[in-house]
Image (cartoon, rainbow, N blue to C red; front, side, top):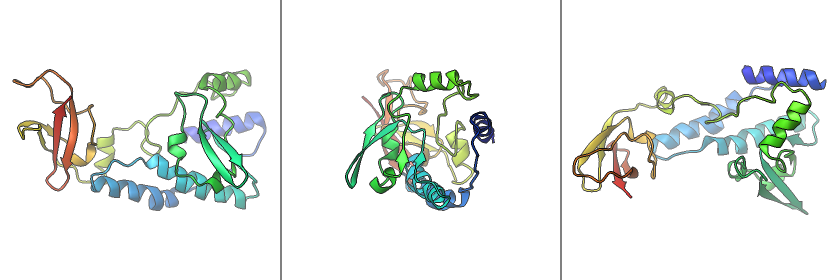
Length: 224
């Protein structure tokens, strides 16, 4: 609702029409179900990649074309190079904001129907342009987190859809050194959020998840 209000104010300032479309049904079927299924299998999905492929560059793009648009323009920090019948997805100029990874599953055909005006700009330049044009969003805080979760706690969010059970944390010697909140919440290579450390007889080094057993609800960690 807050984002829609911002869009409404910008459109009023620019004197252009604002259309509203609801893709929640497509999102549930094409993105969210897959997100939950992957977690149940112990994978670590990135739903933003699937959202771009199935929603922004499929359902939304089709809606726009059916409404009479020739192209869509998005705020992704990427660039596209069209070469005859093929398209190359290039990183945005701003290394800190580059989003090419999140669009890597979008087809070349769909990229051909999209424009990315921010790809050649830095975030600071974009904010300056918005400020110079007195847009209300010029100082808006950057969005972070997964698109449909936002900045909510992932454990609390997933717990609404997946049963999470506490379980053991073992080291590489199968010594019990801690307790986790549900094996599906953790990913291989994870360091943050393990809440293990200061263990007697162990080196004072960070711990990393190196293995997990979803069926037994166990995770295994090591140092180094």
